[in-house]
Image (tube, rainbow, N blue to C red):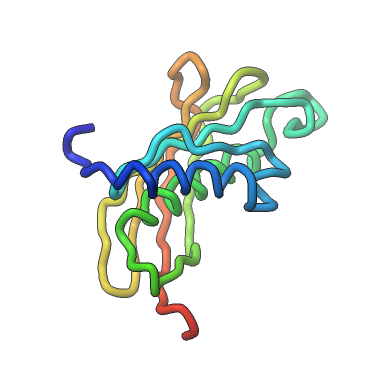
Length: 145
């Protein structure tokens, strides 16, 4: 990951802790940041029965959520404290079902403009198999706008 610049260790540790302990949706699902750099992040969601469809495979939303979250975390190292992020569009192609292990989303920011950013995401299972491919567009807005 040498193409991505490290964020400060204090910011990285605070971000990892905050996402895991204070973001209600993350806590509900059990998502966690595995690693983060400026413009790159990995988010993990341990699979559990609460994420399953009736046939026992992960619900599409359970795969979508860490993908969306990984883009947001990757962007956090690229925005100013006076800015915030909103997902405005996301496309996902589901490739393989998952019934156990971890859902691991790796996001790379491929464009960061003044008002929008685009993230490319690969979602894999614990064995490294590709289970989904995503493209997300985020809006970058000034706080208070």
